[in-house]
Every structure is written in C-alpha cells, then in structure tokens.
Length: 399
Image (tube, rainbow, N blue to C red):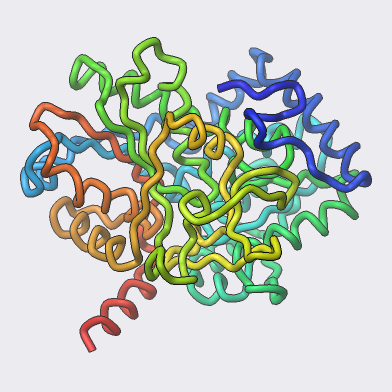
C-alpha cells in the first residue's frame, strides 16, 4: 500500500500538527526520502541489523503446539530473539541512523511496555546519542525490569503523571518536548502512527520481518502461508509482517489477521480495541480510528499488556480495515494469559503479553483449520518483562 504525497492512506493519515513542528517534520520527510534509496545507508543499516541485532531471526515450526491444537501447522517468527528482546530494534536502529545523518545529537521516545524504550536506549548508546524516554508512571510500575535496562543503557527515563499515566500520555509528553528541542533532537516514534512520514518510515524499517518470512517459509514449505497473525497496539509488528506480502500477486489468498486487546471484554469500557470499538478522529498528528466518548474526547484504553493499551491504530491499518483486506479480531486479558501459559509449557518459549494476544488466535482457531494450512504468528517480543504481571494475575484468578 502506498500513501499519497501528503501521507494519506485513503482518508487516513496526513499531517495534523502545529505550525511550529512543520519544519521538523519536513526535515525528516526530506532526509528519509533521500536515504531510503541510498545504497550506503541501506548497507549500513543491514550491517547493524545483522551483526549487532542478530538478524535474521528464526522462523520456528512450533510442532508441539501444532500437534496439541490439531489442524494448521503453526510457525513462530522469533522476533523475541532479536537483540533487545523485541521487534522494536529494527526501527530504533533505522531511525537512530537517520538521526545521525540529520546531524541530531539527541533522541527522545515514548514507551509503553518498555521494549521501544529499551530499543531506543540501545541505539542511543550504540551511536553516541543523548537519550531520554517518556513513560507513564503506571507503565513504569508494571514494567520495572525494562526501566532498569533503559537506565543501565544510559538513558534518562521521565515519568509521565498526566492523564491516564500510560502510553497515550507518554506520546503527548514526548511530542511536547520535541516541539521545544527539534533543532538538535529527533523524536524516535515507536510505531506506525503519528504524522506523515512516521507511519511509512516505521513500516519500512519493520518490513524486514515479512521479507525474511517470505524467504524462510519458501525454504521450509515451498509456498506462502495461508494465515499471517500479529498483535496490534499501534500496529508496527503487524505492518512489518503484512506489508511485504501485500505486494504479492496472490496475496488475496493469504488471510491476514490483527489481534487487538479486548482487555476485560468488548462489552466493557476496559479494552484497547480501537478498530472494533473506535471511530474516526484525530490524535497525535494523524486521522485514524480512536476510542472516543460521545463528545469526541479520547477515552482511556486498557489492556493487561502495556504495549497494547493505546486508544488508536496506525492509519494504514485503518485503511486496510476499511478495504476489508485485513481481518481485525481481539483477545481478552484472560485469553492472552492462557496463551502465555500454553506457549510457555508446550514449547518452552515465554512470549510477551502483547504477542500472547496473537498466540490466542491460534489456540482459538488452528484446530478448525486443515492440517495442511500454514499459519505464521509474529512472536513480537519475549515475556521476561511480564513475569510479575502474569504471576499477580494468575494468583488473583486462583483466589
């Protein structure tokens, strides 16, 4: 999918920004437009992805889980094995390199689950860039191991105590800081949202995931998969998996599924399902689907996974939803916890709670699929960071 010159995917996307940020956005747009096709830049990016981050990541056939569920063969794209523990590193290395080329000396970022904060802190240390992270105080409390990793890597972590004290508010504070500092600072946005060109730029950096899957599944199965599945907050890991397949001649035969956070249920007010329950609106520089009240005020999102409790979705996902090209489903906290335990005990792999939402789709559906169906799930991150959350949640359910 290509956006138009103004960054619109159909009616979604664009640049809804204050005038003061226009020079900063134009600078990024011009620099990325030049560098994305620059051979030296791409070679340098590939070098760091391979020798520093550890690409390519494996495409693993989850034999135990497949046989237990019956039906489709389940493959896991092991982004949890990437340096930093999540797919976020693909984007942070790319944008940090871009920042260096633009002459910036400082990078800032928002984070929810902490994985983007860790990835940004790693990139800051690697390239000698002063690094500051904005993180909601509620997320700091539930993702403490990642907070300590960011500090160890030399980043300053700024608690955000405004609003609901989670990811949305961290984005607000990061944008506010960037408005006053963009002359020496690059805002390293972590997902496929925000004003143009962020949604396309982040997607491009993450598309290494889908490119590798295309090659790896052809080597292992001799054909493309029938199903591609990924969890969705803002939607970067899903776009990274889906995008390279969308350009294929026979892509209409591939069932692509994004899994939103249904939290405590879509019939409650405690979920993060912005496509299922949201409507069109504008926030953080883009037009997309957002959770809103009757007066158009942005509502708080909720999920047991800190990386999915954002009240909106990237504009390309909104467009794909309207086209009917990608199916958007959801999983509750309980389903994600069950998936977390199931994968841990059948395959010896501890998934991030975010990724567990995608695993739950396999648990619910794989058994009803043909045995020669192939499902690829993007295992976007590892679950070490979530152990306290999971233990507390399981104890509550048992008591």
